[in-house]
Length: 356
Image 1 (cartoon, rainbow, N blue to C red):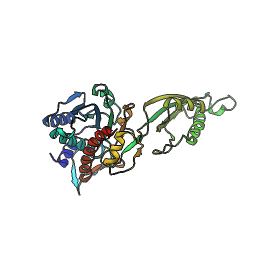
Image 2: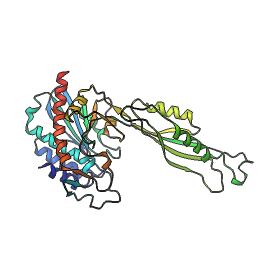
Image 3: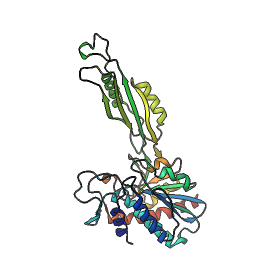
Image 4: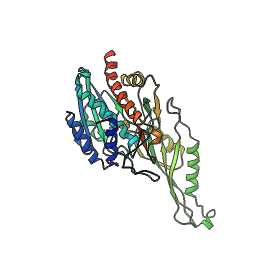
């Protein structure tokens, strides 16, 4: 199967988060036909190639977001236009999946390429877009890992730093009264209190990161008030803070609870910011495979967030700015470059490890 045909087949099989079963079945059939033993948990599948003292995870996700408004083409009917394949998931991240599968097929056909240097664990997982039953749930079954490659569209630029996501629920408490008697009755407007805190959040600055820049809090939802003629005694708002490496989620939440008048509780903190040192073998191999492109940072979250302290690089064909948009596409030349890149990265990693 050619790279173009493989990508087309992936895009032609709908796999919105939570509905990846058909695509996982198809991928498993291909891989087993190439001679690997596939393991499965839910809509997640993985298999190993080679053997040796080091274990490298090569991972990307099978799922997509639902199709949004504005598509001029059928999202699940892949269409080639001037060397580009249009279709939902072509860029995020079925191009990465296709390139990784082709790299795996090449190694299965030529097992001597690894020469006992190490074991590759290829994992194609579910629900990355929703943070559900995906990579984070199958990691224990994968066994110990020495390094990881996370496939996301980065233009084949090695990403060595990724923002985390801290979601906070804030509640301002006031005292209710009839609007006409607000001052005389000693009322305290919770919406006004929340507005003061929101202004404070807008002015807050956190230390800047070399690859990601600074983090700024964004208020994304707000709700308060029961009636138009009643001073509100409660106002709730949510804060989304895309954190950078070095920012401890618990410490940030504690600091904000002291700075704000509102009650602050953590709504979600599991997407931790990540970074990998440029001295790690996986980073050196990725930079070499890219032709010397300097590492970059990424503002978007990915399954890297669940890998703990495993040194990782997020990298793949495509452009992150095309993701989650109408008429998403991946160019064939990008896909072919991605196959070559992953092949070089995989072999380069074990060479870097051998050098010490």
